[in-house]
Image (cartoon, rainbow, N blue to C red; front, side, top):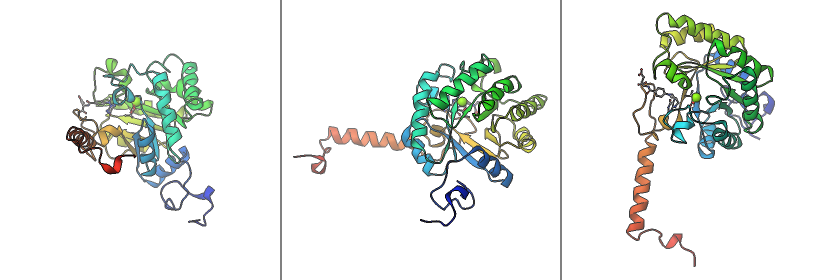
Length: 286
Ligand SMILES: Nc1nc(=O)c2c([nH]1)NC[C@@H]1CN(c3ccc(C(=O)N[C@@H](CCC(=O)O)C(=O)O)cc3)CN21
Ligand SMILES: CC(C)C(=O)C(=O)O
Ligand SMILES: [Mg+2]
């Protein structure tokens, strides 16, 4: 025993977080972090090793993003990825974490048709993927979808601003909510909160607008290209860790050079095999 505080009374993060074992992050913990003014990080994860590493590093929320379309499956946009492709990734991540709250991103076409379709897909991710919450893109027009899912007991994260599944309608990868459009974004955020969302992602939104939405909402905002005043910040992990060597969006900061490290490792392995240096005597059975 490392603590005299009953396990049920320990917060997963913040005060007392050093006392183990920590408990599962819940949506009310995220609202408490907002009330305390403590910003929190969110990362994507798509497999076992990264999920474990991020969970143990104290990332409270992991998103199995439909960005897996780009970062796992090699599509050039997020539109083609399916529920069937994402489900095993969700299952791998949920199996691999003990604290993090795992959010399953609903892919394009799996929820837009109707609130009923949205609930059906959300239930699949909760039941078959053992996710802890789901996320979907859209504002006021998707409030009925959010309401249907939350009414069934499933936490929903909203996503407004630049919504990649609508890139063809939005006219490309562009900042949303400049000028008069700011009012629409505020209305979208309030509608999602009213519909029962537990948090809302703001993607590529002017910092001033994100700040205003963050102040108006009681639920946390999660920024990506939305400035420093959001309650939380999210990045795609391959962008954050420099695994993605492509041109990064302006909102990305690279905290490591994983592509470089892996490339050097692979190059060294190849050279040692070609040079007859690997395997050495310590790697051989007799
Ligand atoms: N690797 C990866 N990172 C992401 O952040 C991400 C994905 N994939 N896939 C799904 C969506 C798509 N997103 C993206 C992808 C690219 C830009 C981008 O190229 N932005 C440029 C141009 C902005 C502009 O033209 O105004 C930038 O410099 O920010 C933005 C969001 C965010 N998501
Ligand atoms: C960038 C985040 C918010 C996302 O939706 C994804 O990774 O799919
Ligand atoms: Mg997404």
